[in-house]
Image (cartoon, rainbow, N blue to C red; front, side, top):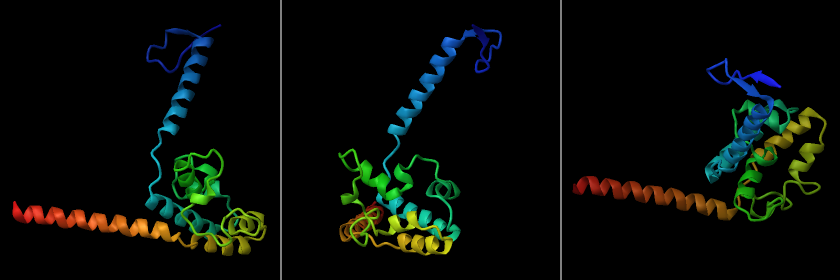
Length: 171
């Protein structure tokens, strides 16, 4: 079967169905490669994304995380529709969930443990309850180690600015 290929500027060029399928598959493979090459989330992006996502869910109450991600303008594929899960997955060699290296200090040790905040949010069917849980999830504190890393990053940035200013003065 011969079809005309609308992709090419030369519309008179006949293209076989097999060739069109090959091009579609090539495009899908390029998409997968692009997703794999997606830059890792920084610590700041993870924290800010988490706060924005759950703030949106606190406002809407009944939305899914997928809809909330779209509403806040997220275009990347986020593992489990969760910035913390994405960041943990990117920094782990383990194939499954990497909850042990999550940046947040979840009450009970994990968000998805029975009785955990996310678990309760997921199970709740009342919008008011879901909103309240979303606010709690938004405000979950960072682990101490993460706080120290952020402080050290800020100090390093300050040191770099001081060094730059000294070089300008001495120039």
